[in-house]
Each structure stands twice: as structure tokens, then as C-alpha cells.
Amino acid sequence: MSSEWSRWVVCAAVVAVPAAVAARQATFRSGVDLVTVDAAVLEGDGRPVPTLRAEDFRIEVDGRPRRIVSAQFVDLSESIAAPQPPSSPHFSSNAGAGDGRVVVIAVDETHIRRLEGRRAIEAASRFVDVLPAIDRVGVMALTSEATITLTRDRLALRRRLAGMLGRGDLSTGQFNLGISEALEIAEGGRARLADAVLRECGRSLTDYVNTARAADDPSSARDSCPEQVEQQSRGLAQQAHAQARTSLAALEALIARLKDLPGPKTIVLLSEGMIVDPRREDLSKLAAGAQAARVTIYSLLLDIPLFDATQERVSPTADRDRQVREDGVDRVSGAARGAVFRQVGSDAAPLARIARELSGHYLLAFEASEGDRDARAHRIRVTVAGGRLVRARTHFLVPATTLPARGAQLSALLRALSPATELPLRVATYTYAEPARRALRVVISAEAGNGAGGVGAWLGFVLVDAAGVIAATATIESRSGQYAFSCVVPEGRYTLRAAAIDAMGLQGSVERVFAARLAGTAAMRVGDLMLAPVPASPAAPLSPIVDRATGEALVAYLEFQATEASRSIPVRVIIARGPTEPSLLTATADVVIRTDGWAAATATIPIGALPPGAYLARAEIDVTGAPSGGISRPFTIAAR
Image (tube, rainbow, N blue to C red; front, side):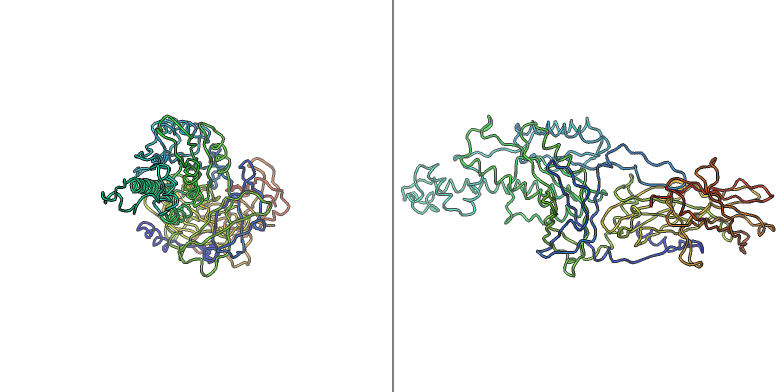
């Protein structure tokens, strides 16, 4: 946990909670006993299937079935439209404020020959142009690059791709050996060595005496051809393994750099194939990193022609060579929930298929067993009814505890320069007088999720004044995804940053800039009009809504400066479609004079008969027989 995050948590201890609003904390099981995995269910053309439910899936962990608690479709196609941040003055939302998807084109220069990758890179350039303008794209070589720059500058991306010609070379030697047979010979395959010796040396291996010593024993009257074949095979195998380690290390580093970015990320790997021997290369680290960073790797396997001008000889095992290289790339993509597509020349079809596939996927939550949280990799298998294609991770790893990780994730979201939109998040602020401290009390209300129940969320808040000083913070683990708290601050302009992570791992953040000041006149100052659901009991505190009202009734709450005649001042709350529209409902508020010189007015308004739509609540204070200017608050009734 960072030192700054620790300071924020300490600040939360001094946040004051008023009598009208409670900051309710709930501990729920989802953060402890649920594990989430991502999976894509695709039609034959690669388009995601968005209509499945939890009962349509089956999950097996280490061969044993698990109960699926939730299946939520994440529609990434919604994030590719041009951002249209809402401009409502009474609340702020991250809806329409998306920063686009993150796509990184990783060119495996070590495994691409200098000339043959040109047409594929040209296709990748067209892929960059096809991606929506809002998507952030990066281009990097899997060599020694330490940074990755994400940009929307398509021209700069095309120029970057144009400079990548490939750095791989086909090692040549005295003998014409294919990489697949070289690998087998290096592993001690005597039958394969015998075939190569017969082909390259012109005689059977059995014609030689003690092939291991042929070159060192001139008296044997035998040449060293068999040993030289074996030595060249070992050299080719060592080179192939070293090149694979270079590319895999670069991929792991890239995944680690993408981890702090919210939401899913996609890596498109361009390669001619690599040698990934599961006995030598443990992909569990890459798989665990991809799972934690929510990275999917799609691979474009560049087609290698049987013969080209750069080759002096055709490999005697060309078909097997192609297969072993493809198997390596397939293992890498499979470890990161991706797939391999063969790229022939500049054909745009494989990249178009990838573009369709990355437009949506499911987040599945299942109940963890006692042994899942052991920080070890567990095999997982996801299937779906109907025989549709499923792309899911083959292993998952869950740390022993998720609490420090949640704190770090919230901290990163609150620091981020752009909003995260995967999880809907809405915040509203209400301002009231705090006479005893000659200050103002700001009530902050937040809603994370779509309001359909969900599985809870972790929320974090930071309130910063105009000078950049933190005025208040709060954190909460909420079963409902809703939270309200208050803090006492001087009058002024503030920036509220809010972040949320639900139990499915979806992330959201939003920023709201507002002025903390009272309305009304010098003779009668008025606080904001608060709208809240009817509490469970008269003694229960109010929990203000952000914008959406549900249920059969709504409570309107108002504070205003008391006078000697305040007990007899009528306060009416009117519900209308807009400021100039006729009244639909009117309720008279109960007024209570407080000991601090202020009055509190409360009215309960039945809204069950109102159709869904946008409304305006307006409180009017009748001071001299004519209503004052009043105070209003827009709200929305959602479809029931």
C-alpha cells in the first residue's frame, strides 16, 4: 500500500457523518469467496454472443465442477463511440466518458525475417486505421524496449510500424537441417540423428565408429560428419530457445506495464512462430500476469513460404518446422485467453476477425474452495451449452488475500488522469450549513453498478480543494454498491474523485467539480434539496440518491435559516416535468426548528404512479404569503 494511499485512509478517520446521513459499511462475502474469470463466447464469424446467463456456462477447476454465481457480459463496443460526457449539473457520471480500448501491436522482430514480415506489417497498419479513433494503440518490438506509448495518432503508429523490418535470421551451417529435427537431435533423438546423418553425410550412422569420438580419434579413419551434424543441431536448438526466452521475457514485461491500466487490454502479436518447449519454458508466470492485468494475446502467425529468395536451401523438414513454431505461438496465446490466426501476405481477414472478437466478453464469478487461494495456478475449463466457441484462460491464480490489491487498485484509479468506464459510477453532492463550526457540510452520495443488485463494490473517494489540498477521504466495501458520507469544509470550489471496483473486477472512476456554497438570500440562506428513499424506520438516517429514484415514495429534505416565524412558514415540495411545467404532485413538509438556529423540512412524496422519465423536485418556502425563489433538484424515475 503506497504512502499516499495510507495518508488518504488516515484522513478518512476525521470525516464527520451528520445525523441526516449515515455512512453504512457492510462486509460481504464476494470479496473473499468469489473468483472471477473472463471468457469470450463467439459465433462462427467471431462476433461475441451477449445473451447468455450463468446457467448456460459450466466451469471445472482441477476437474471438479463449481457453482457459477454470476455471468456478466462486458460490451466493449460501447466504449468505441466518441466520448460524450454527461453535462448534468446535479450529478456526475462516467457514462460516455470512455477513454477507448487499449490495443498493443507487438512485433516479434526476433522471430521475423528481415523481408518476409513486410506485407504482414502493412496489414497491421491497416488494422490500426480500422480501429475506432478513440482506441489507444501502442506499437512496440519485443526486443529491449522498456516503455510503451499509447496514442490515438494513427499516422505516428503507421510510421512506427514501417520502421520494423524484422531481425530474425535463418542460421546456416555446413548441413541443411530443419529446426524440428535439430530440436529432436539435441534432445538425444538417435533415430532423427540417423536420418540426418544418412541424408547429409551420405552413409548410415551405423557405418561410423563411436560417433561421440570420431572427430577426436584420427586413428579411427572415420570422418567427423555425424558429430558435426549433432553439434550443429545443438547450436540451432540453443539459438531457438534463447530467441524464445527473449520474446517471452519482453511479453511478460509488456503485460506488467499494462497491469495498472484499468479494464481489459489486447496484445496483437506478429510473429513467424517461436520454439516454446513446455519442458523448458514455464508459461505460468506469463499466464498469471495476463490474468492479473486482464490481457488477452491474439497472435498473427506470418505465413512462411516453402521457398523464398533469402533461403539458400529448403528445409528438409519444412512441414514439421512450421508446426513446431506454430505450436509455440499457440501456447503463448492460449496462456492469455487468445488465439492464433495465420496471416498470409497482407490479407485483412485475420485482423478483422480479431477486431470482432475483442468487442465483448463475459466475466464469470464462481465460489472459491478452501484450496483456491493458495497463490498457485489451478487448471480451469469453461464450456457453454450449444457448442459455441469459447475462449477462456486455461489456468487461474488467486492471491492469498485481495484486500491490499483492492487498496492499490483504488489508489491507481483515483490517481489516473482519465476516467475508467467499465463499471458505471455516479456521484452527487449536497451542501448544508454547519453553524457550530462556521463552515459547510458537504454530503457525498455514490452509486456503482447498474442498479440491478450486482455483487457489491469497493469504493474510494478523495475530495481536493482549489489549492490541491486533500480535504477529506473515505473508503467502503458495500454490498449494494451505494455509499453516502459527509465532511465539513470551508466554502469554496472542490474536486471530488471517486473510484469503484466491483466483485467481478470491473473498474470505474469519475471526477466531479462543484462549488460548496449555500443558496438563498442574505436574509434566508438555504441548503440543497436532498432526495432519498423512504428509510426503513423513522429513526433511520436518510441515504440520498444520486439521480435515479426507485420505490413507491420519495423523501425530500431541506435545511434553511430559521426565524421567529419559522414554525408557521409553509414549505411545499412540488414534482413537475420541468421548471415551467405544471405541478404533478405537491406535498407539505414537516418543519423542525433545530437548536443551532436552522430549520429542517421533510416531506414524503408518493411517486409510484409516475411513469418513468425525467422530473424536477422543487421546494418552495412561503415567507410572506408568496413563495420564495425556492430550491430545486432534478431526478429520474427508472423503468420498473
